[in-house]
Image (cartoon, rainbow, N blue to C red; front, top):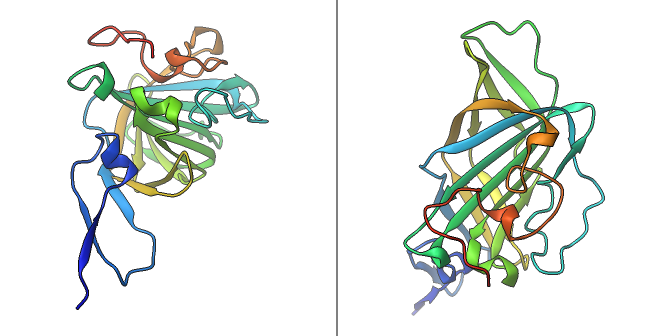
Length: 219
């Protein structure tokens, strides 16, 4: 008889997912956990004449968690999409970061019309704030290939359709974020960005917004 056994994933250990995945012992293929896109408000910025920082270097504390989320001067448009959940306490807070370098937005786009824009480079990070320094986060690189931009009276509305695939910081477990991300896009200049939004540098402030429900503790 084949007996099932419970596998506790990285996401479950971080408290990001609560379900236990049951796998039969005969299954050899890697299991892909699924989690929904954040339901709270998104911060969505477009930075013109910009690029995603190249030549990534692994941070001694946060590893690869902030790779691809730092924005520098360049010749393209970069989208900075961020989501945050305060959780029940500082050590259950969760974060999502998406940074996209995109193809040119058509100048001919008129109000109410939608353009499908090619994504040239994409980076995704998802994890629990208290666990990042231990490598307990998921990241995806170039797993988002296209976005939708709808012209509005004040600018653009963005939609990113999942799934977004990611691998944990150790490279052993896989996560798929399903659902859609939708927000109104606000234009910012490079000089206006903070660390959370894409300013150069990697510290704890790179992984949470400037204003949170409760103070962020250092650890």
